[in-house]
Length: 102
Image (cartoon, rainbow, N blue to C red; front, side):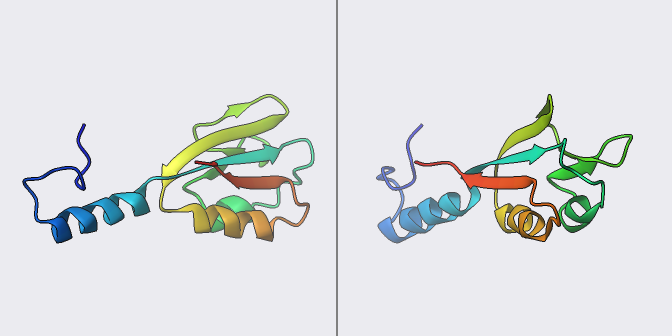
């Protein structure tokens, strides 16, 4: 697929703007929850229901993620600030949000 910047049919200003707009959308990051340390306070999924949800015991898990003592998932969207707010609000510090190195 040709990026907008490489597309010679677009004016350069439009191509550059499209490239930067696409850059805003695709920030890849990972979320990890140490479920054994979770106290089921509901803070994370109250702040950020897009990335966090409760299980049947009220403990947090990553939406669409995998679990086995830890719940993990990766995301590519514009909502990392919500995930970071949940991370910093966790009273037992069991959430890690990590940007993918590019």
